[in-house]
Amino acid sequence: MIHAPKGSRTAGPLRAPVQTLARLHRRKHELLSVLDRLEIPLHTNGSENDIRALVTKRKISGGTVSEAGKNARDVLLGLMKTCIKLDISFFRYLGGRLGIHAQPPIPPLPDLVRQAAQA
Image (cartoon, rainbow, N blue to C red; front, top):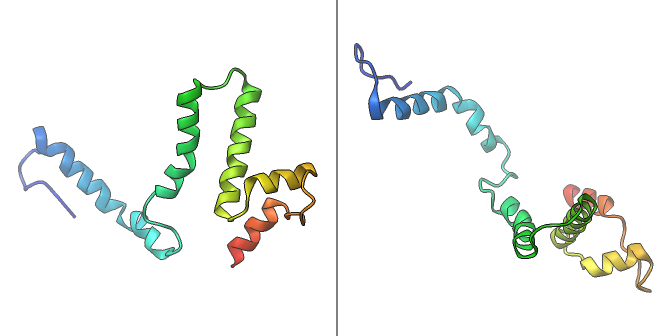
């Protein structure tokens, strides 16, 4: 464990780093538990990429006018990102849900997500 030198009072610029290191040391087991789950990436690039399109769209358009518009945009963006992750054409998926395409139907996304998780 990291301690300040005996008899000294940690003050000034050393106090915060010493406290931070001590807190991290106390939580070491919790912080390193991610190493028990090797399927979890050690970075957040995937999550950041998932929201990047939403942020870009919001900046360009200035946002939505109504709550219903925000919900519709969020739902469609979520469907699109899920289709991309499952390597499915978003427009083909949408066409299948709306009965537009005469191609073989695409199963519901929850079924495809479960299949991908089990693979």
